[in-house]
Length: 115
Length: 111
Image (cartoon, rainbow over all chains, first blue to last red; front, side, top):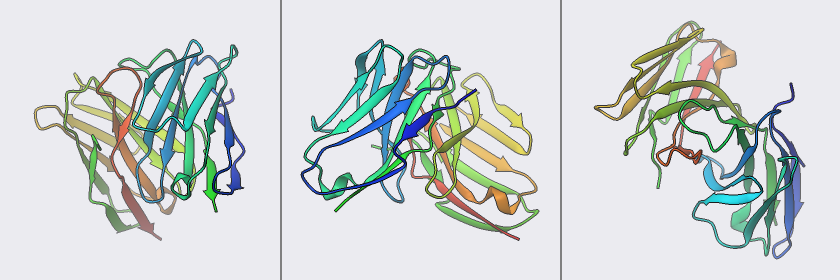
């Protein structure tokens, strides 16, 4: 049973560029969330997708956008990259927007470096 | 803002010793989850404890929850070098899958 898979694992972009990160949820899961983790910090919630719609959003600017496909996979897009966007981007999946008792599983993350 | 705050921020122990990490949170919760993160890697789910549970065990892990004090603790018994990692608690106050993490406890277990 494949867990949460993310791609790419590492990438380097230049300020002002755009980046797309991809995530496939754990088998059977239909809800995908994205988190940003800066070095030495805990993960910060970006947004959550369920039934191909953004359901919840954290305190991130509109430069951060996403999409969920009919097969439940998801993309995170970041436009006009800033140096401060350098971080580990984590994808998480669960069954339904996780209510009490639903474990949330994470992927290995995508390391983004902006130079 | 951070919901969970772990304490201590860093902990260094010898193999075989027990490691205790604490987490405090601010709002009412339905459950609290603990995760482990090896350096530069993803988060591994360790244990979920519901608000109506006071203690839960999983192998060498023991988690307690005190909702009156809004705190939780994670105990790792007979630690091993492979337990070296950062440990995070996470809560979901909105009950919709939006996890809020603390800054974590960095555990170092020396052989």
